[in-house]
Length: 278
Figure (cartoon, rainbow, N blue to C red):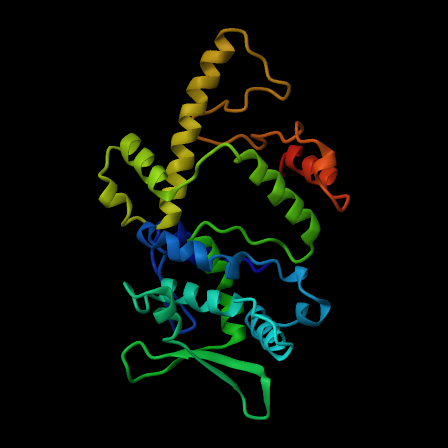
């Protein structure tokens, strides 16, 4: 996975726009969370889950090739290329306020004159005159920044896609009884932070995520501290020993029955979840 230079990491931590490869990338705001939810798959997608033909391609080229092949086989396209363009529209603030479809239509696909299956770039015109092109190589370069700016985790190329899917299922099962919505999260963070909800919608999504994690960590510390004072013990120690800093390992998935998973990856997923990161 590509390392993000320190100067960009500082800007990301401060929720600042980043200028790179002739582009100005902004953190996506909470107000555009619905569009962000539609587009994020193009950023966090695990390329190793594609057929081997596409794995060595730059990700944007792979998205294009997959969709071209699908259309040629009279199947629906994956939509990954469209999602990538929508995410770029959000990050570049192209067509703000327009529908996702309208924002995607602001881009033009440029292919090789000698091979229509080879994607040269996707292009847009920010001022109606100058044309800006984003090549597959450029997209590959800015991908880690797009992810980090918006709280998305990118997985290493060496990770097992089947194992990642098992872990995703594991995590989704933990949230089965919770009705999750961005509005509820905004209201909760707003109340505990003492700021207006309208202000929170103007925050970058990453800021909301970080504020939510900080508030949850403080509340967990208080609750676990009270429980510990009453004699409660945890198999692996207090899961929230500090109000400011997270514990290396803070959740256990050991109660999930192995029989609910297929492919032989469930046990390994649980083992990874219970192993503290180094």
